[in-house]
Image 1 (cartoon, rainbow, N blue to C red):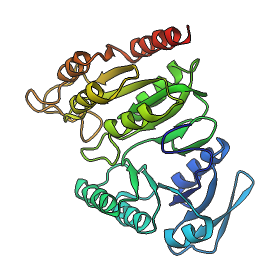
Image 2 (image 1 turned 180 degrees about the horizontal axis):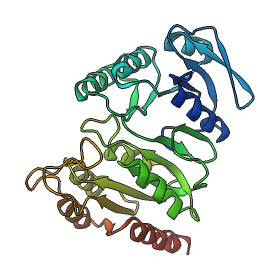
Image 3 (image 1 turned 90 degrees about the vertical axis):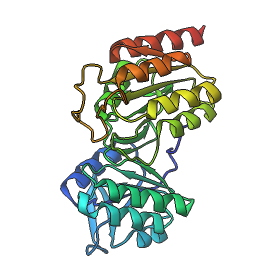
Image 4 (image 1 turned 90 degrees about the horizontal axis):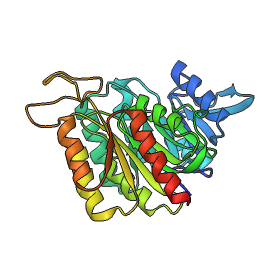
Length: 296
């Protein structure tokens, strides 16, 4: 099994005919993703050939869903159009919308996240995220598919780059699903959402959780782990040397006074039994020890 995405997921790409959309559609197809169509307003009825496959372009998500039965949309549209694109996907009943776009205004994210919650049917991953991959089955986003194979580790990370590094570090064990949730102040899927799903997934044996400075998501995740997660969890928190008041990489990665520091997050996680590595490699080694012990 997996969480949120599998071989049966039917994926459309909003913005597929743009340069980034075309590039990453090519990569998703090469990794086995079931791409069933693209959506570009004004280009409905066209066909594009990618990886030797003719893919229909639809003028709207509603048209694409009716024609293909799509269950996932990956959004590659400019920031000023992202809100409209996500609203369209939600209104069309898409169960999973993966928003890759960086630089989406926070009030736009708040609006489409609230709309998704009100719908009761759509999960959003992102924005400003690398997406989600179930190795060997499906890849919705920009995660390189060749850095790790199938396995029994679940990975949830705020950072795209650290998602890739952790997958590579633990490539000898592999992953059930790896999900990059994004580092903006408001995101659709949280650490807790992923932890809950991995805990319920019979094909996930242990979980890696990567956080970073800013906000209190990791502290809230620690409280959730204490009460709800029985599987072993290891963690890493990026930003131990970040200066106060300076945004580091992600819009949400900013320390304000004593709030949101890496040390506070580490202490919260360790207090509930989560082993926290000082570096990504040390974190991977902690997980490697757990997986080796589970195999005995």
